[in-house]
Amino acid sequence: MKLKKSPPPPLSFLWSHPAHLIACGFGSGLSPWASGSVGTLFAWASFPLLDILFPLEATLAVFLLLAFVLGVSACQIAGRNLGAADHGAIVWDEIVPFWMILLMTPDALLWELTAFLLFRFYDTIKPPPARWFDTQMKNGLGVMMDDLIAAGYTMFTLALLKALIEELS
Image (tube, rainbow, N blue to C red; front, side, top):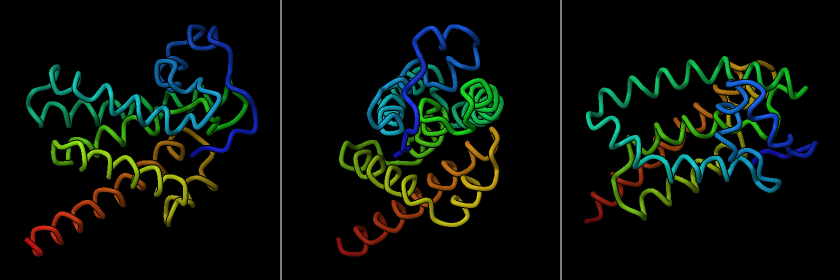
């Protein structure tokens, strides 16, 4: 969860530049509480739409790659205009990695809930090298990378859990 040092920007901020709308997760980042978790919930709620728009996993994967690249630029612009590289209102860095996690997660509520909790955990504790990106790269790439690494930890943990369950079954 991002610890906010400043309040969310006004709604008008979203409409002042397309990058703001994207970086702030179409408004989900404007939550005054736990904006990172709210952004991740937005990702979870919107993922079924992506499944409809991109029925082939390969096309969805290409879309997610493009969304990540776009996110680097959008987060850079929004962070500069908000005066903080990783302002609490910027949640695109949670959204795209969580979509990536959901692409690889079994399509069942318990697995998705576990993925959500694990991702929020890893995004909060920022294990290496995520912490390095968070503290040393104060730009759009650093903002996106620490959450991508948290997603990697999440997917690895989910794979271990799945293997353990299969072994015990």
